[in-house]
Length: 285
Ligand code: A3P
Image 1 (spheres, rainbow, N blue to C red):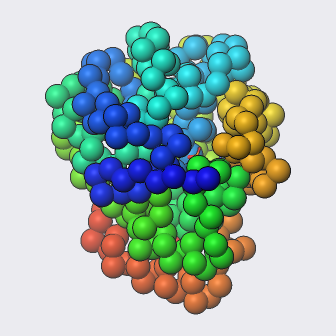
Image 2: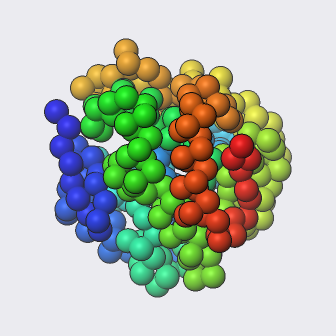
């Protein structure tokens, strides 16, 4: 049974969050050495967690293969991550789906680094729709058309994609933040890892790039139970309804959007993002 929690004006899954856990995130005491992965859901969060785990372990795949991703890179706001947040050593790898305005005050008081991962919102909408079928903590999405309408209105759980991206982009002169796209990871994993390494001031150990290529591919992560949520009980994620590591491609929206849905999406995108300077732009046609 799905339960909703509302915080900072957005709906969130009540099975993963309480007002207390959300308040804890908003007042989080960041350390200067913290690295925070911030994403709207389905934008490549788990992929980035895997990449940074490998970089932090200097290419040693054992942590990525023996520790679940939510313990390696715990979510600040989720109930079940509290123990991991307490235990994680420095430098801490952290994750959030929270909008920028919730975390910005605490982050601005710190020197923590933020890596914001964004993905073409058309593919986010498709991935999120499918995820609603297996994630029992999310509401029944109804038809794809109905879900897309809610996605464009920003009434889905985790709120508006547009507000999320614009909110975090708005922090780029106030925080130490690197903006990375899912599409860049696809196009050039090693080049993006080099960029991450420069940003983090963490030189890549010999062999790390080879380890990244081997362990962070879609095929390898699909087989890694510590990265694909297959160990989560079916009452929370029902894997008979679909896999977390679903397709892992760029442009899957073309197989889901009707011409009318595409036109509506483009119109909304233009209204919301027309004036926004994105560091990387997606092909929207
Ligand atoms: P799809 O549903 O389109 O397949 P998140 O981790 O933010 O929830 O994002 C999940 C999405 O990222 C899923 O997209 C998943 O397949 C994709 N993904 C995860 N790891 C990936 C990888 N190594 N390569 C490509 N896509 C990956």
